Amino acid sequence: MTGCEAALAGGPEQSFTASLLGEIAHLLGQLAASGTGGAIDLRSLPLQAADREALERALGRGEVEARLTTAGGSEVFETTYPGVWWVRHRGADGRISSETIEVTLIPEILKTHADDLAGARGRLAEAIENRLFEFQAGEVE
Amino acid sequence: MKTDLRLGDMLQARGVSRRAFLKYSSYLASLLALPPSAAPVMAAALANAKRQSVIWLSFQECTGCTESLTRSHSPNLEDLIFDFISLDYHHTLQAAAGDAAEHAREAAMAANKGKYIVVVDGSVPVKDGGIYSAIAGISNLDMLQETVKDAMAVVAVGTCAAYGGLPGANPNPTGAVAISTLVTDKPVINIPGCPPIPEAMAATLAHVITFGKLPELDNLGRPKAFFGVSIHDRCYRRPFYDKGEFAESFDDEGAKQGWCLYKLGCKGPVTNNACATLKWNSGTSFPIQSGHPCLGCSEPKFWDMGGFYKALSEPMVDIPKMVGAAALAGGVAGVATGLLNRSKKAKAVKSHQKVTVDDLTKGDAS
Image (cartoon, chains in turn red, purple):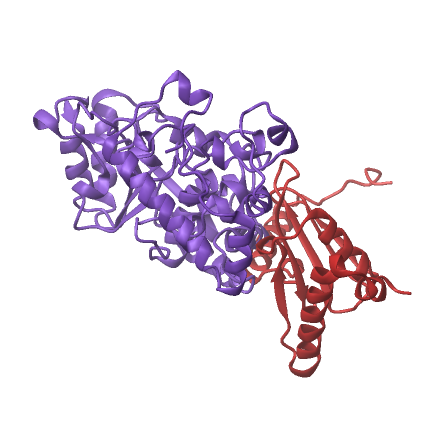
């Protein structure tokens, strides 16, 4: 029995998880049909820790995981259902600041923004011009 | 005070990536009860926005509001708000003093005419020409009127600025009034609380910077995202209220079991705020979770509400039955209880009952 099947087979206490799974399935169908998915803000729902854990168990962890180190840590992982991502942002104190289920090909937070790209291009060109990467023979093993 | 650069460019130069903007916007969208799809739009708008000039005026206050905003979180995500604003005048925080400080305020007003936001904490005394509080020889009343003249909007933080607060409590010796009483030709946002929740202050400012307009406000001028629901309705002890299980004193079995604090004077049913969801001290707890009734600190006249430990009213009906009926009648009973409590609150305010030692051991609730 998969985590998802276990959640759906559970008693009334699993009803929140079952409802969310239904919504995720709907968004996944939408993504497959039109290329437009959606997102669910878990912090806007009256979820208890047990509900959140049940949902995470039901969706499981897939083959992609990423960690961000900007403005505190963040965890992003694809669930066992490709296209369904769990995005959990934390502040510097480790407290969860936002938590969403994103149904998309790739979460926006993982993409490189065009402005950052332009900045990186400029910085790299400057570094090359200033010979910041010039190594003397024998310096690099 | 340089405000001509886009926030995106300014922060990129300091190594803040667009991912940080997006992460902050996800946090804001969640706080402001906006859909997650709003986050990328907000991130783009924030990156294109200019740094917002803010002039912070402190009048009859205790500095608790400033403490709340500046000390509640560890740095990084939540503190990004301080990168988005240019705090051009705040006499508690600024290094300048005397004439130099006042010149900084005047310079910010001139450089950002019609675009700056004035944040005010504290009430303004108007009795006897406003002589009871002055800064640099300028009465609070004169300084407020002079500063808001060319402002884009005014944000009254804390219950003193929003409703008069403690200085305005009976007998109000200085004639303290709320900012909205004096500022009638500019948008005024009230973020009450003693002190206000830091997220409410930061997110409201971020909303104005991001969207260039005020968030949706309730009839008391408060952002609905934070003040749209009563503490009672979001309280984790609410099921005990619905079952009619109340603590009768601070050390009885009900208190130990974590039952509802309504009979110990909890003002949660008539207090709209986000304490039950956002909590305090980095999400650790809030008064009710710590076993103390809500004082109603974000409501007008909360000091004169009849005593912190006096129940709003004894439930006169069988609560579980009434809640059952409410489920069928679409919450009518809840509305009725709310109206009953508000009526009781208004009566108490009118007759101003002082808190006594007896109140601490819960006297007659009528």
